[in-house]
Image 1 (cartoon, rainbow, N blue to C red):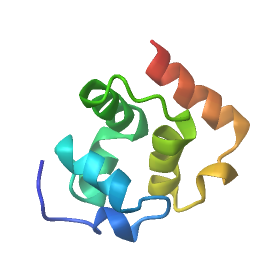
Image 2: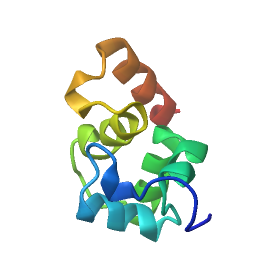
Image 3: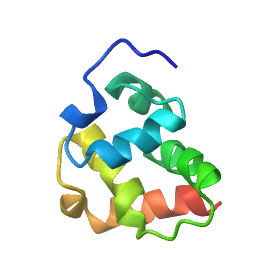
Image 4: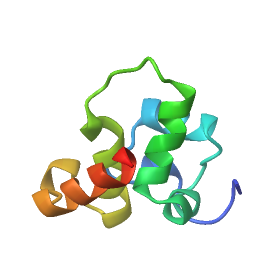
Length: 90
């Protein structure tokens, strides 16, 4: 993935330094990188790197979706949250 193109991750809603660091570990450095992968795949990549971590799904999955749609993770509709959960479940 590229380090150029698009806004920096910490410029996006819901993405602080810790989450940006986890994304960087997974090869995701910019908004464009995250957009190419999508929220579910980015979540998968982080879970692969940190399998023992048991954070609420909102911490990564919904944060990524909110970052891509410019909204707080809690404002994502329930139907979309279910779709995202289904994408990471199987």
